[in-house]
Image (cartoon, rainbow, N blue to C red):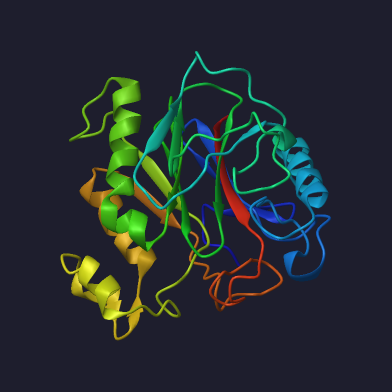
Length: 267
């Protein structure tokens, strides 16, 4: 049972945000095999590249929007997708530079977030334990990729500021108010880290530290509220201990796994 206002959309999870929709995919319904079964959307894996292209094309057809990807590096850069951008290519035309099947002239921009006020552009974040975080305020939408490094470096705050700058609003008190949705990711129930990672979040509330475990979702909620986000929804699903037929998990599967995505677009 999904917490409201999340709902099932075919094999995936969805939520309506102000002026936008966010979808968090599961691993079901695709063409990949083996440890990547079946809707693996990450090309920088050892999966069959053709299967990944078919999976991406299938998702585009299901959602009705072209997908935009970036090269994620666990940083804080948030890319603005503006009117000067070229028309979004089909899903198979973009690929991470690490993918040997990539066309030599295709290089993805390096970023860990995307923001746009253009309609019909699906901003995608690839994840397999990191958090996909959608933001929307009625006229602008964002999708962020937030692992522990990105959270510690401030990707959430940068995402909120980029939305506000694109809107021409106040990044201190966002107006119109922002709503956020946190998709499936590593939960505080399972995510064990070393002391150096706990130290990176020494300024966070004590409840984010649970012995050796760290609650990334609680950190994300705290950062979102600190940045002025008015409403935060968390789907509350852990990719590590949750249903293995639903989500890929880098931690659970010891690195041999696929990627699901968070996608957000203006509806």
